[in-house]
Length: 239
Image (cartoon, rainbow, N blue to C red; front, side):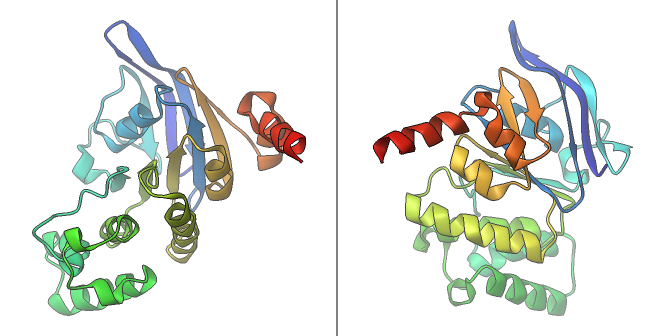
């Protein structure tokens, strides 16, 4: 298995946040994790990224224990809900940042960033500063900056939560297209039922620090705990 979390436990003081949690993620798969606020979703992502340490358990990437490695050596990128772009750099240089850090040749930087801008539908915005962009455009730049370094795993923490409904829908489709084009391996965390179904190849339900991953979307929909049946019943009553 490409990415594994094994028997992860995490608490903060007397509060138990993750309870013997395990998951497996195949290469090029996107797993949606659905859960309410406080269910432990963000803590799980931070442990996978190395931003938090588990009290117990381990994270494996291609069979290698990630425990001893700091975040910058894991090749796992964590994307927050807010894009967190560098305000003093334009769009091109924000996306190019990781390549420049790795001292990539200038010709390669120009070529790869231009290709990324085209994939993100942002070529006309290359010289703009972050404050000149819309929320959806800023989030696209954040994706580009993350993907340009070819991370092995992308961790998406409610990336569209701050966007309006129309922009959110267009960003979902853009991310699905980019995920296919770049063969992304990702965890996509959300509290939106519809978004979980749209984005994930598989879906997991997070409740009180425990994660249940379903073998198929059909199994997820049929489980009363997920709330899908209640949602469908609601719309039937409206009709």
